[in-house]
Image (tube, rainbow, N blue to C red; front, side, top):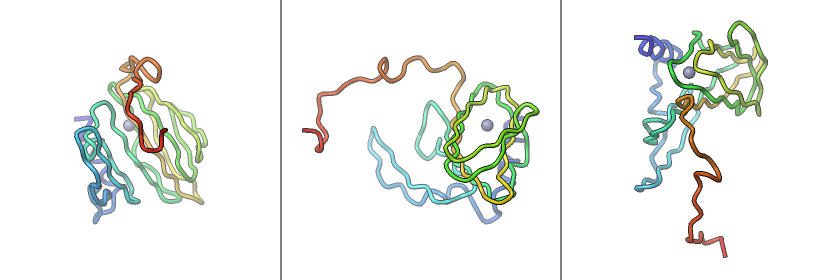
Length: 155
Ligand code: ZN
């Protein structure tokens, strides 16, 4: 029930004419091991379904100057990594307000109660990656596997 309330609240801030599925122009490439989509400017785009992601949800969010996500939310089990791609604004987190701007990246624990708004004089575009807290087991050197194949630009 909490989830559907969050979803409907999220939907309310989308323009009436806009469906988030329209924000992906066209699927360009799809193979067994690769899927690529192009994302157009939109209030919110969710990539989980469009790319068949199995370990995270990624959303790209844009708020015009003076606009705010119209709710505070927390999560049941997902931590979130946010990255501000352009513009600036503020995050309210557990009762404190912090300025955020392009180039900033921040992590929010599942229990963190959060809300984001754009600055009064400029919009903000940010990416949000949800992953299950505590699920990361290996990364970079312990998960990466070197392969014998050579890309054409590798001699
Ligand atoms: Zn969230």
